[in-house]
Amino acid sequence: MSESSERTYPKEYTEAIAALKKQHKQELERLSPELRIGLQAEAGAKAETQVQEQIQSLQNLYKQQKEQNIQLQQRLDEMESLRQLETENQQLRQRIQDLEHAVEQRPSLRDAARTQQWGNTITV
Image (cartoon, rainbow, N blue to C red; front, side):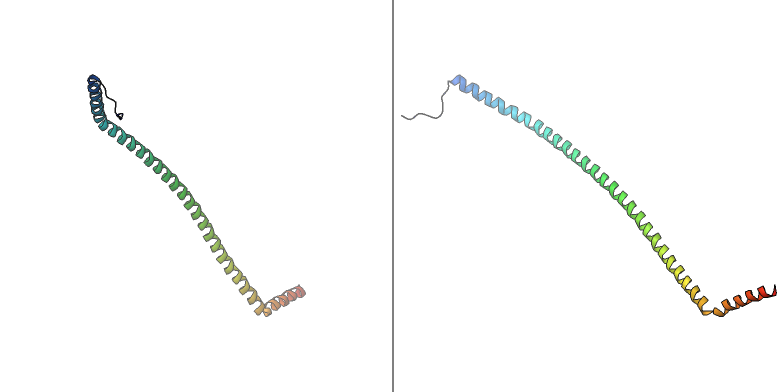
């Protein structure tokens, strides 16, 4: 004789168990839409929170980029000012060289001025 793996219950128990299973199944079916709605609401709230966090992160990144852009623009303005000063310096150096060269080319004016000074001191 082999033993059966299933237990046998009296008919009242079997009926009660079947009724409980049916009631449980109906309860699950009733709760399933509510659970789905709850899960969807929870997922929606979580997604909304993530979106808000991303928006905040992007706003912070935008502020940082804007600040960096301002600093870079200030640096560019400084560099442009320095470039203009360098150009002006070069022009002034060239002007000084031109004037020095002109003075070297006209020693007679310098000598004439000295002679005139000596002449003024003698007649005085």
